[in-house]
Amino acid sequence: MEIATASMDDVDTVVDLWVRLAESQRAHGSHLFGDRNRTAVRESIVQRVVAENVRIARIDGRAVGFVMVTIDSGRYEQDETRGIVENIFVEPTHRGQGVGSELLDAAEEVLRQAGVDRLALEAMADNESARQFYRAHGYAPHRVELEKPTENDTL
Image 1 (cartoon, helix red, strand yellow):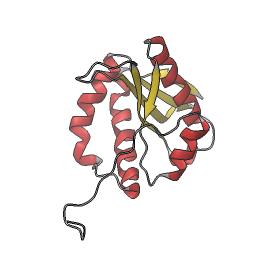
Image 2 (cartoon, helix red, strand yellow; image 1 turned 90 degrees about the vertical axis):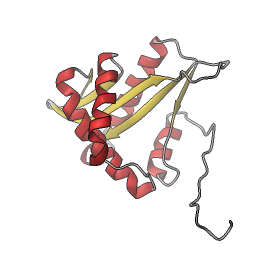
Image 3 (cartoon, helix red, strand yellow; image 1 turned 135 degrees about the vertical axis):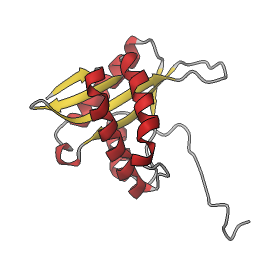
Image 4 (cartoon, helix red, strand yellow; image 1 turned 90 degrees about the horizontal axis):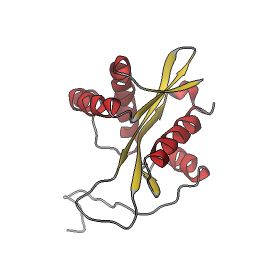
């Protein structure tokens, strides 16, 4: 397995992997569409590839996963600089082989080198396997997002 910094030649491959990620997350309650967001996601991936903030996993030369990172730069001053691990995805046929762990390690190293104090990521509340994976790598809940439909019996 090889973990490498994604290049412009990898953009379409990463977009395809992101679309598969988005489609798979709908089973866990995500509201994002995969293919309908292809154009917007491509623009975002191009920006992150140019900034060298995308890593791609290859086995025998074939892309089997990716991860993107960013540094939290919100509107408010904070006492910690947070690095965000975004959109980590491994093809289902390659899960359980250490690919996700290698991608996560690579993402964390990029963020450490950028000088962040904290590492953060998100997982769908209903995606227990992802939450277990992240717990095994030392992540713990920090913030909980709650939602409900506008039409329900509590209004």
